[in-house]
Amino acid sequence: MARTVDAERAAQRREQITLAAGRLFAAQGFEATTVADIARAAGLSTAGVFYYFQDKRAVFRAVFERDLPLSSILVSRFADVEAPTTAILDLVDELAAPARDPSASGLLVELLRQADRDPELVDVVARTARIVRDGLADLIERGITDGTVDVALVPAEAAAWIQTVVDAVFLNADPARDPTSALRRTVARYLAPPSPNDTRGNNGEHHG
Amino acid sequence: MARTVDAERAAQRREQITLAAGRLFAAQGFEATTVADIARAAGLSTAGVFYYFQDKRAVFRAVFERDLPLSSILVSRFADVEAPTTAILDLVDELAAPARDPSASGLLVELLRQADRDPELVDVVARTARIVRDGLADLIERGITDGTVDVALVPAEAAAWIQTVVDAVFLNADPARDPTSALRRTVARYLAPPSPNDTRGNNGEHHG
DNA sequence: GTCTATATTTAGATAGAC
DNA sequence: GTCTATCTAAATATAGAC
Image (cartoon, rainbow over all chains, first blue to last red; front, side, top):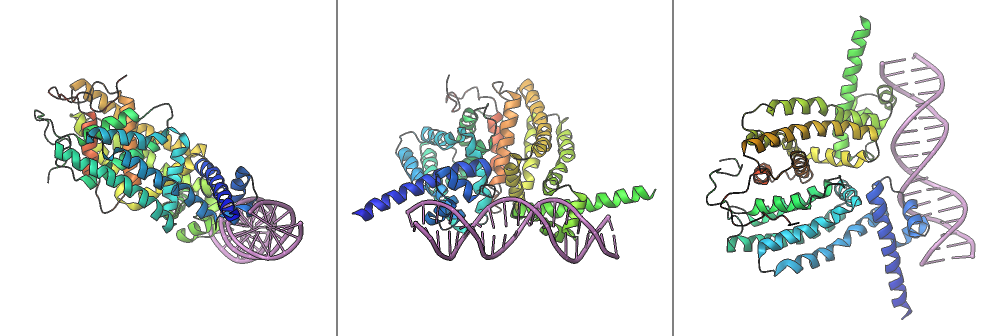
């Protein structure tokens, strides 16, 4: 049974290191954050960090591996809501909520930067993004069926686009301005079927 | 007069270095790009780079200083178009056009990352962004006046939001999917006044 | 398991020849 | 002005004591 205790302690220690590293990576970036910084913030020595993680990149990946199960839970919470359009808007709100933390922007940027060089990291974030996209696409599909979403949209593509717009909220650096309302307005109007009496035509899209 | 020739040659050499550095920064990032890399790509020695630029960060800034006059020209090209809404959509198209080059995504990400640490760089990009935002805000204001844009929008805030969405397009630069159509649809519908016969209410915005 | 001490590597920047 | 050669500093990762 001592083995079990050890495994738990080790997991706690990994979690400690991961959380401290996440804060540092967000604030300073990957390269500018030294393993010595992480070790100090987590309360151990540099060698201690290398005992729990193979290398610095493994620490970085661990920060994002926490998101995968969280995304699954989030998406499933909205999967069975009756009104799909409402569900989409509320889900989008929750996806954008972490952006209120100013450091979230830094972490997203750092993720994009590192993604080019670490295939394992790409895999982790792709799986997370995929879960969200599939969840959104299902809701969009249901919206098309019940007439609250424009039939001209392709669910998978529209879902990916909405994810892009959510990313925009993370980029919004100005903490003074809350983009939540702009985000809801943007997504709601993007999805809406054309008004029957709208004479403005093509909603800005190109012909062809 | 020999002085003039020298100054021209020096300007050319700086341009050479800047262009080569821009490609490398976009592909590899700031930290991962060594001054030796830049020197090799530009056809001189590392010491040569330091002859033309004070340090590595000055090279990085130079990459973005080229954008400032280009943005001014772009914005002024649309300032006097008759239909403001059309002008906005076309301007947004042109702002997003460079996103088709996958390296543009890398460069934007790198810019966002470095902006936190180089106040002079912040100044350069803030001036560029300001020109675009003011141009967009003017067009939005005109749209409100002529009834093609929702009066509920605050021009400066709406302009900043549109810029943010354009930035997001750069981040998710997927060469396979052209975001032009989704972007136009999104911006057009974001700006549009509420349809008079629309019974759906508040377009997704929160009350309060 | 966790530390101290250090080996190894690499990059930015400079000195001085030509 | 542009090079070769090099200095200095710092960071990752490891070896080995406890």
